[in-house]
Image 1 (cartoon, rainbow, N blue to C red):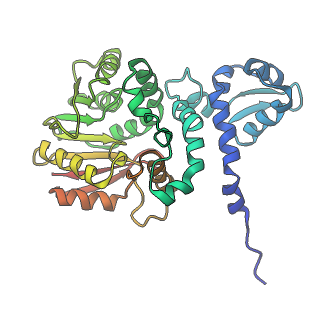
Image 2 (image 1 turned 120 degrees about the vertical axis):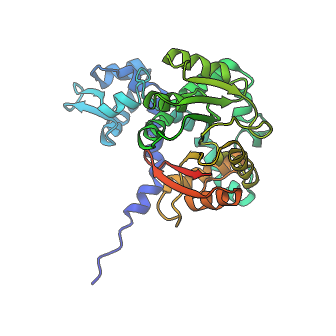
Image 3 (image 1 turned 45 degrees about the horizontal axis):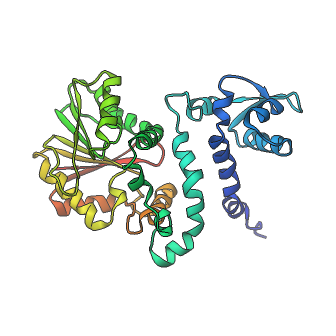
Length: 341
């Protein structure tokens, strides 16, 4: 007799939003930052966070059970502390803090994903635009202070991928690099730290340039990393040996993806390379769950935008004239797809 089929994976996924909301709420409340390197009882930590006594044990112990908090002892005198991972990635004082993107998930995307059925039926965005408001990015680019706060908050997750890019790619045969949509300049800074011979340009809209310039100066790399600005749909891209695009192509529909790929091809010399950092979907579309879910997120955010596989990238770049291709895993579900001219 065959054993009964196990419903656990179905139930685990169905109830997964419970886990997610607990972690996202803890990050938004600053729980991990409040703890820092201290050990506090539940009552002490609850008071610092302004929590009602009813939920304190369940909230903190759920985080312990999910391995996001440490706990020494049992009962009211037990002491809660950050795990090494929590201290590194969820304490705002850590240079590797990734809580910025988690806060955005909680504040924005959690509620917009409620309307996934409508997005699937209509193909239309389900974010602020649906309510007749400006999209988040349109609003941010009009407010320099909020734009800088937002871009800096988003750097934590990107840093892991850009560090991996700098470590895994052989840049020795290239002399210059331009990161298109470079935001805070992080990709150029990580690559420049690892490859001292490279001259780098971080290129974005004019409103972003002062933020990148400030970060470059703070890193002491102004001699090898500079800023430039423009609109990548209307201005020619800088003439360099390598053009990088970190999480840029997935923001657009196919027609605009092809415009960016062709613009990169035109700017590169023979032997030059286009490198795109994305949550590349596996070619068979069976394994990279995060990449597939990110593509659904692009539907919710932008409608026509979508993520893609390495095979898609090779086809598009081949149509643009690129001759050789490679795909290299970076951090987690992210990879760099490379097309050589």
